[in-house]
Image (tube, rainbow, N blue to C red; front, side, top):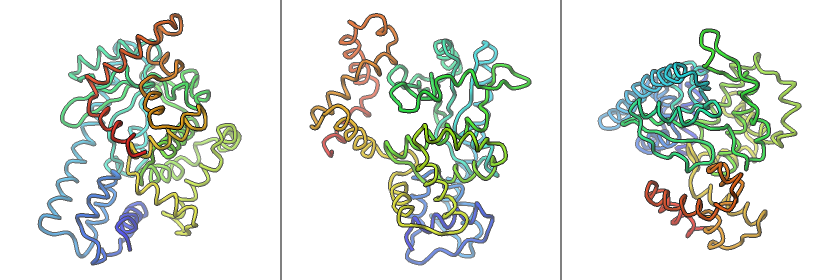
Length: 371
C-alpha cells in the first residue's frame, strides 16, 4: 500500500465514521503527515489516526497534535474574521458574497474538517476601492492588489489571508458568461440585505467551474474530491439537477462532472476504481491542494501553442510579460477608452511585479526553464 492510498483510507474512515485500518509498517508517520499537510486534509486524517490502536508516539505524536491544534485555532480565527469583514462591509452598505471554502465548511460535519488557506469574498461592483480602505482599516496589508485578473489579496499575520474578488471568472475564461450576471441572481440574507448568497444550484456549478479550472490549469488535490463528495451528499435535495443537466453541455463540463462524481463514489462509497479514475486520482495526488506552478505553466504553454502559435519558451515568456489587451483591460479599465496606453501599462505591471512580487517572478522564470 502506498502512502497516498493509506491517507485516502484514513479520510474515508473519517467521512464514513468507521474504524480505520492500522498503519502498515512500511509507511512512515512522517511521510503520511507531510502528504496530509500538502493536501490540506490533515484534520480529516487526524480524527482517524486518533482511533488507531497503534498511534504515533514521541515526536510524531507531537507533530500531529501541534498541527491539529493549529488547525483548530485557524478555523476559529477565519470564521470570526469572516463575520467581522461582512459586518464592516455591511456598515458601509457594500454588498458582499462569501465564497468557496467558507461556505463549504458549513457543509462538512465539523468545520475543522475542512481546512482553508484563505477567505474569499465577491465584492459588489464599483465598491472594490471602498473595500480596499476597509481592509486596511482592519490592519490588513495589501499583498497583491491590481496584479491579478479577478481578485486582490490581503494578509494579516500570522494566519489570515483574504481574497476580495471583483468577479467570479475573468473574461478570458471560457465559461465567464455564466457568472457575469451573478449579482442579478444572488439572494439577500433576511437580517442583512448586504450579505449575499448563491442559490445552491449556482453554488454547485461555481464549485465545478472552480474545481475544473484548478484541475486543468495546475492540478488540485484530495481536498477538492472531499468537497465534491460532501456537496453532492448534503445538498442533493437542494440543487436543481434538471437545470444542472441542461447547463453542463453548454459549459462543456459533462465529462468532468461525471469523472469527479464517479471518483468520489469510488473513493467513499463502492470502491470501484477504473483505469481512467486511477489516472485522475494520481494526477490530483501529485498536484496537492492548489496544484503546482509547473503544471499551470505547462497547461498555459500548450494553450498558447494551440491558440496563438507561440511555440518557444521565449515567446511564452514575452506573452506572460505583455499580456493580450483583453486581459490587460480587466486590470487597467481605462484601456477600454484609451488603448494607446497599453505599452505604458505593460511597463507599469512589469515594474510593480518586480518590486512587490519578486519571489513569484523568480519562480515563474525557473518554471519556464523546465518547460
